[in-house]
Picture 1 (tube, rainbow, N blue to C red):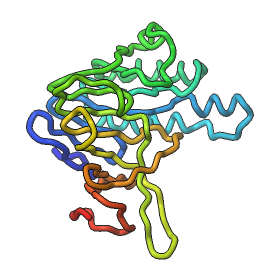
Picture 2 (picture 1 turned 45 degrees about the horizontal axis):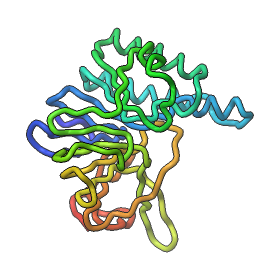
Picture 3 (picture 1 turned 135 degrees about the vertical axis):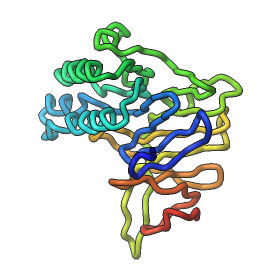
Picture 4 (picture 1 turned 30 degrees about the vertical axis):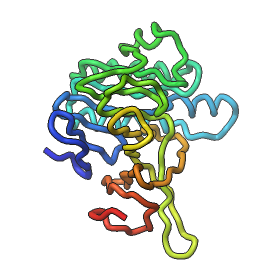
Length: 242
């Protein structure tokens, strides 16, 4: 079954679906992957007196709950930067959320440690997470950063960290920035590297430029479009490559 608005990526046992919710679904492994939730960031800013809405973490976890309910994966892998700040109330809220998901059928939750994941392993393990520096399955290696070292001969490298996005240009000076998945086939140790967008509702973005060897899958509210190989104009055809 094709998830609504998704684009198929790779084939065979490694066929995955790029989801408009900024996640990846790997059906043959019953595995859902997300990156860069940056939970607790809003709570941290609010503690400094900044007027950040307190609901952004609920937005992030609400989307993740919907995906877990729809896809029923056995495993959830978070590709780093689960939390943005030192422990605060949002950490406790996540622990309670994860406990509920285990009760609802999730079997494993794995955290691939990112640069913001600075607590001791025991802190995450007490929540029910398995903490690793990298994770490998069927020749697919998951790390947090694109530049992380991976084994030679890796077929596919999945990572996060940079929060990729593309600027769509319209008529005149009009433009809009949209998040994207970025596929790289040159300049990396793996056959292909795919960088995930930030899953969190309260994160920044880093603009990337599609070019030879770098393709982007653009994300709208309801669908993934592409791949595109050059800076797209607003309203480009989702069937063609530029």
